Image (cartoon, rainbow, N blue to C red; front, side, top):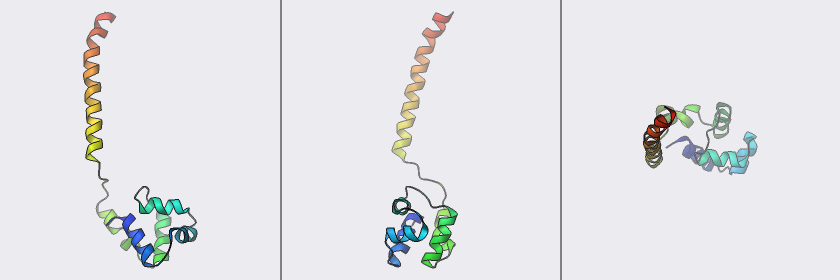
Length: 104
């Protein structure tokens, strides 16, 4: 379970709405939503505020994220950019011949 799921779990456990939590933390409701949907990550100040509001330790909130800090790379995205680079390299190799001929 990553931090986004734990934030939502603790918020729901304590019966807080996103708006209530946002108001207590002086952030927008959209910020809370982004944290819970793993679109952004709270800074240390906000992590500590959440720990106080949820009556938990920082360790309980983030321990698994520290153990596995590597972001998962979408394999489709990696494959897409690999093909783009391959095509650009082939085009560059094809175009370099005529370029050398005309410049000499």
